[in-house]
Length: 457
Image (spheres, rainbow, N blue to C red):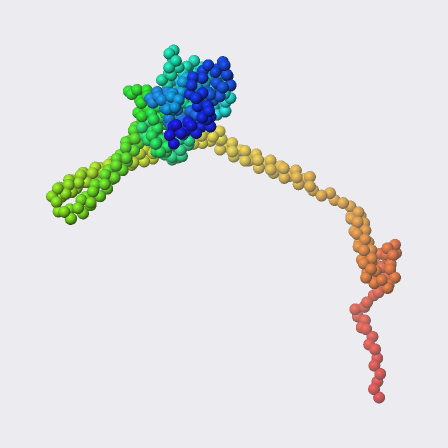
């Protein structure tokens, strides 16, 4: 879809409104405020839509190089004549911020309002970016010409920056120190591979500033001997620790390893292409038997031999660089382990210094004595008191009487023909039973009398 199609298909750019939108509508600010605000809103919405579809870049658009006015022009209506008003309104509403001031800002940048919230066209001119220091920025110069600036669409920067950062953090292997250190060039290549297209230098620098200064997820160190805008030579560390000389060496080593790997791929593709060309020429040689074809084959064989040698050298260098990086990561892990053991040892020593073995033994003896004393007190409190024998005898008789009564009731219930004994019938006294037992005497010497049997006749 062309830019003209995007403009004409936008919901605010209906055929009936195109002429008004492309004319100079600045006078409507006083004559028709509602119409003026509607036109401002329409252009703001269009610019954000085009940026989101990557017509300008990832999250920003330039005023010049290429010209924004030419880019948005239509053959029927020409260039938009009130673009300066549109940009100024978007600046005041904090929908966009000037990239030059954003990058050079020394302290952490934050918007006065929530940039993700929708805005009303009527209040576009009332929101001044005083908190960030951008309130005095003007979109046009004294000659009413658009200022040569790149504008950042804040919502887009936040969204794109978050997505790219999430991808990078997923690629960083936990426990691998070198994975979090990049040169600007290497990081830019990784981002371009993720996006599927190159990221321009201006937007790459904005991303680095946003991550390091505002999000504080990485450290950025620019090279001292290059211009401020050349971020390819910068060192980026996704770890909030000071960038050391070792970090710089690791970043350069990774960058070189990446370049060598790219060269390996290139040489491999060239070798395959040369091999295919040789096969095709051989087929032609078998048919024509021309000397020129034979010479071309020899030339390609020489080229293939040189390419193969270069490929072998690149492969060996790649292996060496990878080995060094692995050893660096091993060394980093060793250092981390040593520091952890050292800290643990100090902590253990500090804790052990608070305990004395003699104190422990004395404490155990005191505890044992207290336990013994407690057992003695418990035994003394739980010792049973001796009851009198009379009371015990009386209680036993009462229990026997109750048991006999219960047994009599159960017997009467089983034999209803027999007259039931009342529960009030007195039991024989113990003395009467004893007296009757005394009259029953058996003699061990007296044999029982045998019954005489009749004599037989």
